[in-house]
Image 1 (cartoon, rainbow, N blue to C red):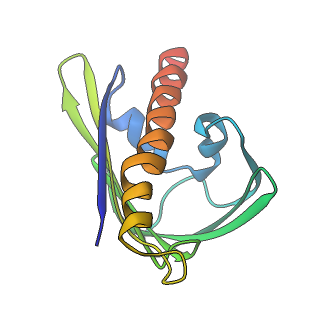
Image 2 (cartoon, rainbow, N blue to C red):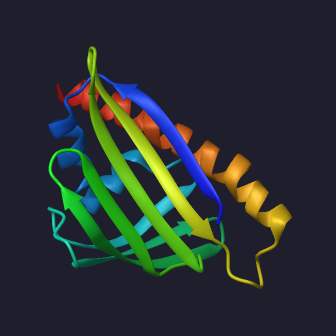
Length: 150
């Protein structure tokens, strides 16, 4: 199964990163340009076993996502899984670790494309092009948002 990992230093505490990421409503603040959030139904705090729903539009395509908080370890770890999503498997670790001058934010995503979209080439494109681009934009937006909030 392909795994994507990306880390960035953020001038914030692990606690601040945890609070920000446990609230799915904050996706609006860090979504890449061209990705429009249509709807988010979720609590403001992550609770293990709780589901959240998100609808997004990218160009002419609308995607519906049902996720579930699998693991919540305040302030160092959030894991969400895709219950109904464009992937056959999606498990996203949000890891927050203390680091000099702030915190290290690491996103680790295990994924599998549906068989009809799958294949080694498609996996590599998602792993080495799509996810790096998306998380680079999300990490930059997170750094900017938390710097403004400080």
